[in-house]
Length: 297
Image 1 (cartoon, one colour):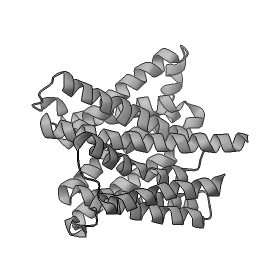
Image 2 (tube, one colour; image 1 turned 45 degrees about the horizontal axis):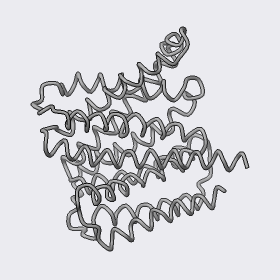
Image 3 (cartoon, rainbow, N blue to C red; image 1 turned 30 degrees about the horizontal axis):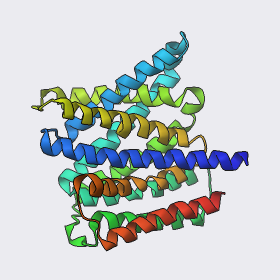
C-alpha cells in the first residue's frame, strides 16, 4: 500500500508539472501577443524571477547554516549545472522555433523520453522496458495529433531547427537525470531555486531583457507572476520532486500532458477550436497514463 501511495504521488506531481507548463504557454502567448515580450526575454526574466523568489523562500525556511550547504563546492557546482541546463532547454527550444516553427519544435521535444531511457540504459545498465516504449509511442502520436491538428504541411524540418529542437530535448533529459543524487544531498527547493537564480542571471547577462519596451500594467504583472509561480516554480519543483517517487523515464513520459493542457486551456480561455483529431490525441495521452499506472501499480 505504501509503495502504491508513493507511485501515486509521483504520477500526480509529474502530471501537475506538465499541466502547469501547459497553462504557462497560454499566458506566455498572451504576453508576447499583447505586451511586446519576445520569447528570449520572457525566458530570461521568467527563470531569473522564479529563481530569486524560490531562493529567498529557501533561505527563510532553512536553518541558519543552510547557505554553507548550498555554497559547498560539490553542491554549488551541481546546482549551477542544473540551472544552466534549464536555461539551455528554453533557449534551444526557442531557437528551434525561430529556425523551424513551433509545431516542429514541439514534436522534436518528444524525443526527450527516448534520450532519458537511453541515458539510463547507459549509466545504470538498465534494461529498457517494453511498456515504456509503448507509452512513448502512444504519447508521441497523441501530441503530434494535438500540435499538427492532422495537417502535417505546417511542419518545417530545417536542419538548424531540428538541431536546436534535439538540443532542447537532450537538455531536458539531462535535467531529468542529473539532479537525482543532488536532491538526496539538498532539498528540491534548493536545487530549483538556486539553480534557476544562477541560470536566469546568466540569461539576463547574455540576453539583456531589461532593455525591451514592455507595457507594464496590472494585467501584465499578473500574467508574469502567474508564469513565474505556476509555469516555473511549481512546475519545475513538482517535476523534480516526482523523481523521489517514480523513475525518470516515467516522469519524462508524463510530460506529454503539457501540450494537452495548453490546447484545452486555449479552447477554454482563448476560444480556439477543438477538432476531432485533437480529441483522438487527447485520448491517446490519457491512455498513456492508464498504461503506465497499470504497469506500475
